[in-house]
Image (tube, rainbow, N blue to C red; front, side, top):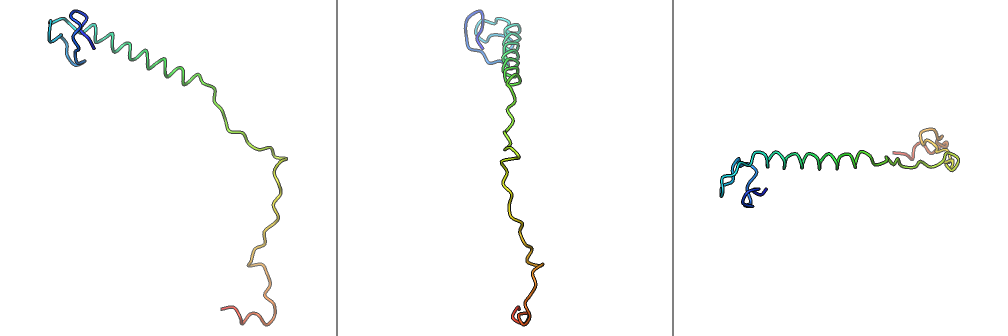
Amino acid sequence: MRCPNCGEVIETRHSFCVVCGADLKEVREQAVHRKVMRAGRKLRSVLNQPVRLPRRPALSAKKEQPEQKNPADTEIPDGAAGHFV
């Protein structure tokens, strides 16, 4: 922030210019107002953008997968039961 009277660069926490003694209350309020307005414009621009949802594939294009067999349902051949440990 700059002093409106002498142009000196001033930290925003000061109430008066350290060089010329000018009151910085109004300048500080204007700087805060500009920051708030700028943030509001940015927020509105983001909120006004259209929402784009991901496209889902068509149901008719989905390929059928073959049915998988459960290994527990298979029968063990006679005489092979002793080979499994």
